[in-house]
Image (cartoon, rainbow, N blue to C red; front, side, top):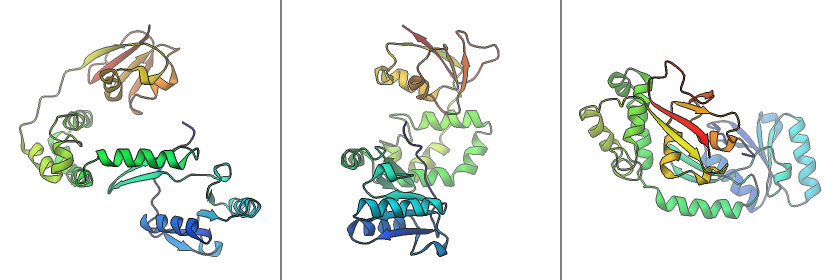
Length: 260
């Protein structure tokens, strides 16, 4: 991963746009769409800036001055001068999917966005909003946070009641309400899955293996397990270096990674 993807809350925040023309206008529209406020000088207190100037030397000089003033800077079409880049965006508010290429190819990012956008249900944002509104009800039904996470994960799986590409994505709040009022499924007992790696390339994982890894509560792995493979596990999953499941590991999915 060459860049850290983050989502900034720009609501009401001042953002400086330097330049004019189509490129500057496009960045201004992007900022406004995200709730930001376009300003024209450092005196307005911006912490973020977009530079859209035609001449390389002018763009580099302005970017250096703004960076020296403490701003994070994006210079249009010059990734080497950027502190951050802007991705291609799929907007299913409050769900936002960003596709970036670290500035390598905006065209590729756009092509991917167009492909993925066609796959996503139009009502996907309604499901996200409904899940947010139902937090209190979810906590009441599943007081234990790990049991709650596993229940939601199971409900969002392919073919399940909240499948974002199926009933959940199309039904939104109605699908969630039906799931919450249905009898609760019993929490699945802990089970262990063993993944024997075919290579260091995570793309060689089978669909089932990738799903196990993404849902694991505990990952047991050898010292030489490729970082690219480990990155496919949940960020908050416990990780143990070794070859055996530690005593006391009794809940959720446990994945043991082995090399071939």
